[in-house]
Length: 468
Image (cartoon, rainbow, N blue to C red; front, top):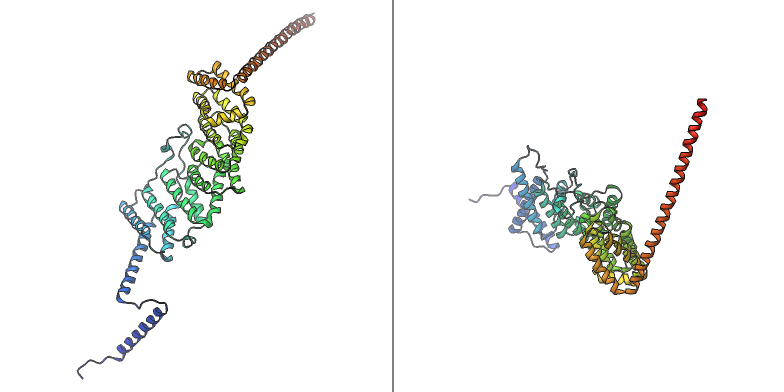
């Protein structure tokens, strides 16, 4: 009697709540889940709060700063960097797949920060003179403190998430935009790009063909149109890893890449900047299929520089490395063109080129190749040696030439003496021909002088006749 009775409205609310609870319990039981508990509700609430915090951080990080506009707030820039660090920490500790409603704005934020207009290229005319100084290729960007974290977040997503989940966000358009960023002059950005792009190639197997073709397009545009691109070295590093994974026998597509892209890359003005990576890629091809050595050697000789001594030194070194992997069956075919080019280099007025060419004779494989066709090769080599000893200005080059000459004489004394006799005979014949040429010119000059005097006399007679 003294208790408080529930009102009809309160009773209805309890009944409704109970029915809803039973419905939820039944549905969870059918899925094999435990019934919700206050703890589960708390964890769900915690997850919702965490997701709200992530979305808030993403929203803050979407704001783009130039770091050159004085109206930008340093405190806001610091806040963005803090939020980026929080997002990086979250992506590093991912234990489950991200929901789409978080992944979508996160990828949009990364795209907004990465895909921006690059600053105009600086004057790089001095690069060809000092190729070994990497600082010359780096133009640091003021926004790098933010970009570095953005690249790290993208790398963590690529490594930790299922490629099929990211396929909707990392598509062809995204990959092309990434590839365009390799034109950045900031060495740190290109290095981060290289890691991200390479990881995508490794994990997103369904994009490999498209990525190879896209990189080829960049190379071809650089070779035949632009001749200016900051990221060729980084792209070749990626290709070096790709080539290393090729199976033997090589596919026709890969051989065409060697002939149409890698070999023509030897002819560009800026080859010094990426020659190390290029030489590695080429050597990988020759190691996998030594029969390709003929195509490679002839291709390099075709694009041999005429006036760039630094490129000549690099190419001599590359040829020496290739000789170690040349198919012995091709020794006789390649001995003459290779030794002819090396001889031209040892006669070069630039002492660095001449010395580098002479040091090639320390390579056992090169000597073995030369001796395989020594009757054809010795004539060219001995002529170059004798010219060096007579005409070259550098004493160090002459000393090295003496050493090589002694080695060649010991190899086949009779053939060396025969080559010397041929040289003397050719010089004698050339001297006689030069004397005959001078005699012909002197006779022509005498006839011309006599004809001139005769014409002068005729003109005088005509003047006398007119005066009368």
